[in-house]
Image (cartoon, rainbow, N blue to C red; front, side, top):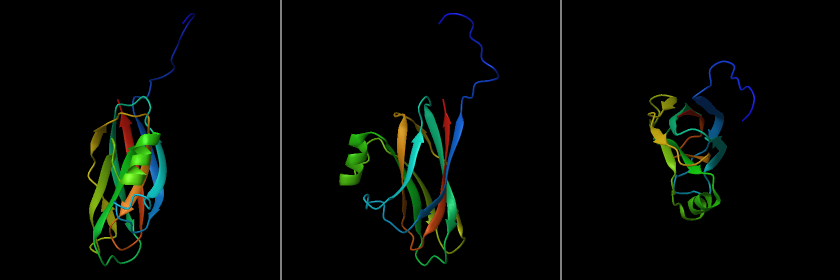
Length: 142
């Protein structure tokens, strides 16, 4: 690098990614070919992620369950192994347990993971008997 280099203001060390309006019909996490594909999260340049999953049920829940997300590294072999064999090679997982008639709202704990890949595909499941409207928050940090 030659010449003058300047940076205006502070450099952001973290970022927040929000995937919202994720409609998730009942689907078992083992049925990997039917999981709801919510897109990808670009994690390049970050070392960790804290995940938060929350949402609301659509109607009265008759059978309680869990709503969750897998973050599968967006590399061909990992995605293929997940869809074809249900193998979770380096996948991250977050779950909101106890989705029930007790409240229309649900939320997960907030697990923190070390990242090993620059992009992750987000796949959602729902073991309750009602469709849910979910959102996933990914707080990326060094």
